[in-house]
Length: 91
Length: 112
Image 1 (cartoon, rainbow over the protein chains, first blue to last red):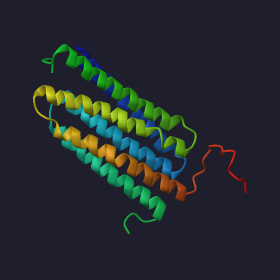
Image 2: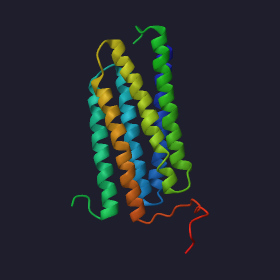
Image 3: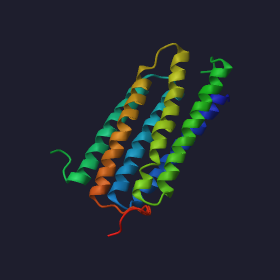
Image 4: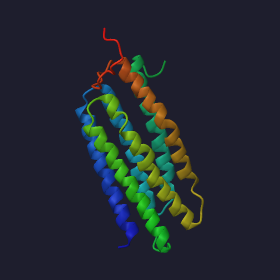
C-alpha cells in the first residue's frame, strides 16, 4: 500500500466524518437558515466525495458528475435561501 | 496509479490530506459555533481549502496521466464563484428571519 492510497483513504474518512457532522447540524437546526447552511455544506462535501472517487477509480467520467452536483447544489441553495427570505422560490 | 514519480506521489498525497483536514475543520466549526452568523463562516474553509485541495490533487493526477483536467478547473472556478453568492443569500435569509446573533455589541453603538 503506497502513500497515495493511504492519503486517499484518509481523505475518504475525513469527508465521511464531515458529512456526518454536517448531517447532525441539519437535523439539529435550530433555525431554518442553519438547515439551509447544512445542506449547502453537504453538497460541497458530496462534490469532494465524487472527486475522490474519480481519483481512486482513475476515470474522467465522474468529474462531470461532480460538476452537475455542484451546479444543482448551488441552484437549490439559492432557491431555498430565496424561499426563506421572500416566501417564494420563483417570482 | 503506481507509475508516478515519488515526489509527485507525495505532493498529491499531501494535497489530499490537506483537503480532508480542512473539510473536517469546516464541519467541526459548523457543529461547535454558537449562532448562525458564526456558523456561516466555518464551511467556507471546507469549500475553498478542503475541496480546493482535493481538486488540486485531482488536477495533478490528470496532468501526470498526460491530459489537461478541464473539468477540475471548471469545478474549482464554479465553487469559488458561487460560494460567496450563496453565503450572501443565506445571510440575507437569516436577517429576514431575524435570527439572533450572540456576538456582543461594540462599545460605541448607542443602546436604545
